[in-house]
Image: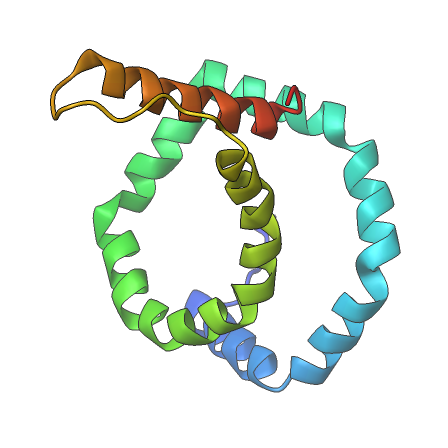
Length: 142
């Protein structure tokens, strides 16, 4: 016996109508989910790693990118992105500052050799010192 399913257009209409009035439920759900989310996400670290490895080995990442194609990305980025960009940046400001500050402090703590004339290999050494210090900070060896 065939499985009866709803029409995709009708399902999409129901999805958008219900989501449009669900802001309160979303806010409540997110506010109450943090402890459970943290515990469940931490417990799933090995599963996540295995899933990523399987996806990479079987080519599923590339297949998904190719399925979405650049047209979907461009359409969504140009229709949804602009209205969310400014508000998102404003909201993210304090988190950006907190995440950036340790790296700026790392750079400020460096003692670089003097800058040399443009094109000098010594300038590459300065850049390499900055890159190495920032990498050490990121991976926790600084």
